[in-house]
Amino acid sequence: MGRRNRREPSEEPTELKLGNFARTENHADGEWKVTSLTGDTSVKVYRCPGCQGEIQPKTAHIVAWNMDYSADERRHWHTACWKRRTPSRY
Ligand SMILES: [Zn+2]
Image (cartoon, rainbow, N blue to C red):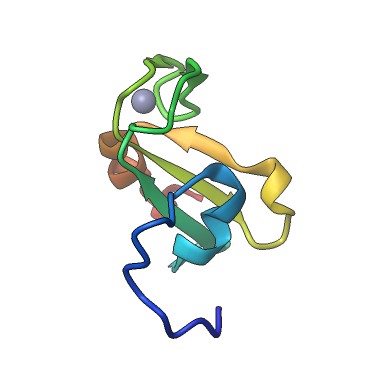
């Protein structure tokens, strides 16, 4: 967001900085902020809303939230489940 310095070695993609890494995707149910986590910083087990399965720590996955809501409402998805999420169903 307005920052032009890239690749600062000290910058870690922590959850607090998610907004800086997120891209915007247009879906039938609105605009979503979407960001990919490498898994390096993930230490918790998350519940994927796509398959109701668990996302294990150290697993690369997607974090997404609808822009109608705050980033506090973000959800963690398996990468494959996010791609399978077909908004045409809505
Ligand atoms: Zn899943």
